[in-house]
Length: 465
Image 1 (cartoon, rainbow, N blue to C red):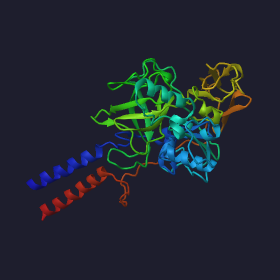
Image 2 (spheres, rainbow, N blue to C red):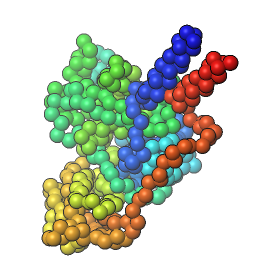
Image 3 (tube, helix red, strand yellow):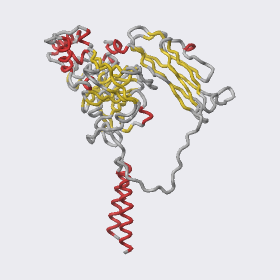
Image 4 (cartoon, one colour):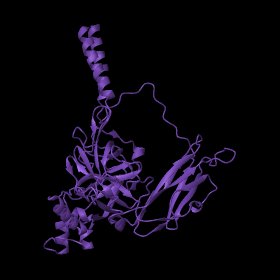
C-alpha cells in the first residue's frame, strides 16, 4: 500500500500540473478567441513564407515586404530585369521603378480573413503587390540618397537602414466587409516610452513550434522616431548617438514584457507583418529583432511620404456594423474609426445627416471635421438603445432594424440590429458520458487524469487479490 500511495500521489500531481498549465504562443503569449480574431488581422501566405497583416478598407492588406521576398536586392534585380535596365542607378526618382506593381503571376500571395486559425476563414487571392520604394532601393531612393550622404559626412559612418520601408501593399481580388478597423497612425501619444502595445501572430512559440491558433503578446514601446510623435526622438541608441533622431527614419522599437510568471513575451519567427496596436492605433508592422523588436511605422508612409495613400486612395473604416440582441438587451455603442488614406480632401457629413433613419433606435455623434486631409482621422459614435419611450423593445422576434451610416454620398456603411426568431438553446450535459476515442489534440491534463484513474483501479484490483 505504501508504494501505491507514493505512485498515486505522483500521478495525481502530474494530473494537476498538466491541467493547470497555460497555453502559450508568440513567445509566452495567450490564445486569441475566435470572436476577437474577427477583426482586421489576417494570415498571409506568400513566396517568402507565412506572416500576419492588416486589412485596410476591405480591399487592401499591408504586411512586411520580406514576407514576399527576403531581401530588397531581390526585388531590385527583378525590377531592373523586367524594365530592361542592365545596371542599378546610383539615384532613383523614376516612379515606375520606385513603386513597381507586381502581378500575381510574378509573385503569388493569399490572405485568410476572419478566423483565429491558420488557413481558416475566408481565403482571398492577392491580385497585385505594390513594393515600397525604400525597401527596394534603400539609400538610392530619392532624397534618401541625400540623407545618407549627410549622415555619412556628419558622423563618419554608413548608417544601417535595414528595417526602414519593410512594407508591401496587397491589392485583393475581392472586397470584404470588415466589422472593425484600426488607424494607421500614432495618434496623440505623449511620452510613449513604456506604454504597452499588443501584437498577435501565428509565429513560432517559445518551444520552437509554429502555432495553428492566433496568439497575442504584449510589448513595451521603447521609443518612436521624432517624426512619429516622440519629441525626444531616438537621440540615443545605447551609448551611441542616433543620427536619425530627427530624420525620416520610420520604425519604432519595442521591448519585452513579463507575462506575470517570469517569462518575457516577444514576437517570434512567422510574426512578421503583424500589426502592433496601441489604443486603437496601428503603430507599425513587425519587421524583425530579438530582444528588441523593430516595427516599420506606417504613419511616415502616409504623411511624410504618402506612398500608402498613393496606392490605397480610400477611406479606412468598417464595411458593416452588425449586432444580434435578445430580450435582455438594453443598449449598445459602437466607436467607428474613420481615416482618410486618399490623396484628395474627403468631405464628411455633419451629425444630422449621418443616418438614413433616425426613428428606429439609432443615434449618432461625430468628432469628424467637415473635411479630412490625407492621414486625418476621427471617430463616429453610433448608439442603438432599442427601446421606445415606454421602455419596450422596438424590435420583435424575427425583426431587423436596418440603417445606413452615410459618411458622404460615396461612402455608405450598412448597419443592422437583429432580434433572432428563436432563442439559442445550449445542449444539456449528459450525466454519464459514454467512452469516446481520445482526441488528436494534445491535452496532457485529461490524459493524466485518465491515467490516474486506470492506475487506481489496477492497484485496487491487486490489493483485493
